[in-house]
Image 1 (cartoon, rainbow, N blue to C red):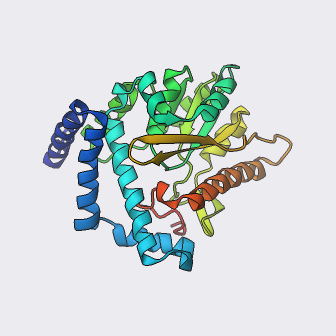
Image 2: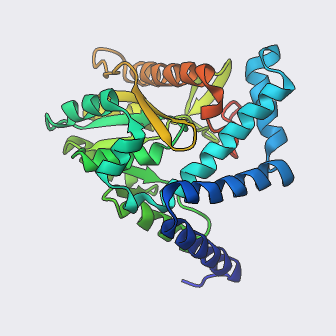
Length: 299
């Protein structure tokens, strides 16, 4: 494969930045992340106006300009902090995670199910440090796997996948063979960690979300229905810089007595309704900066 100069430069910068984050103590690494977040938010203003427009479109007059700025800043800081944690995933021991994460009910629920040998799906919202939750699941014996989209830079793509795999989490690339691998692992008793709150450009399902309609993927519910496994709606929220809490919503099982399409739509609505409620409870936890606004109409 021939790499463009841009790919090589981006990869080199990422490796240098990662090396710095990995040698520093956790809170010092977060401070470096905070400096980058502050500069890109307050000086560069990277997508800040768009994030605030989205916040106001959802909450209307319930949020002032000051509130919208505060929510957007918390959201941006959280995603940068989560990026710092991705670079340090293989340094996270079980003991260390237990010192910063309060999620006993979430993980006891997931582990009780996977210990039966049955597969499951954890529908994790774009909130807090969702990658940290995956690492902890692996440490306590939950067979976690996930699938990810490919980055435009192939060097960066391969490096990020290696970082995710170092703690023991299996990563499947989102390609033509991904569906077969996902179904096989679910039938073998694995837990699929999936991010459901993402807009599909075309196709998908129209589901009520944040006061509008979101075009979301049907894969999550389709996998659950095909393998007859439950969906556990889950969130991880950040409190302060370095404390995390996990929460699990009501378990959603397929109903084989329903029409297939109706059942897939029902499960998707229930997952998005849980996430909707959590976002409204603490909007700064959610990622408002996604390139594709989830409430934009399908193409």
